[in-house]
Length: 128
Image 1 (tube, one colour):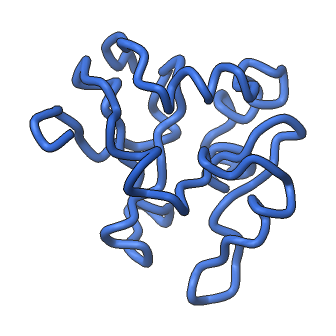
Image 2 (cartoon, rainbow, N blue to C red):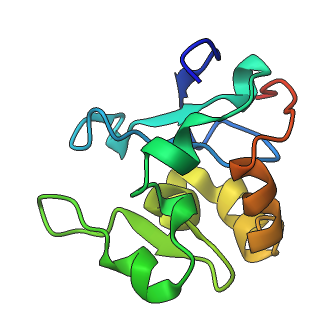
């Protein structure tokens, strides 16, 4: 996994098929008022890291209770439940992520899609 390319991304500017994940290395860091998110998809790499090493990644939570139990030090939710899957809070709820929020609520990010992402399907480029 360490040879795979990744980068930090603005979750609200991404039009990825696979949602970016909240970083584990800087859990309280923020950029433009939002958590830091990373993505392998933007670099056309496979994500071998998240499933095995970032066990508290929102996408790794399989139930609503697991999802909503993850909190930041401030006590606010790290993740949000879509009704089908767990994603970073901003992707589901933040007003600046309006397009992604629509995609989430339309069911575009369902649990099968997220499982495929975690299992490292080959991804496309970021298109803003």
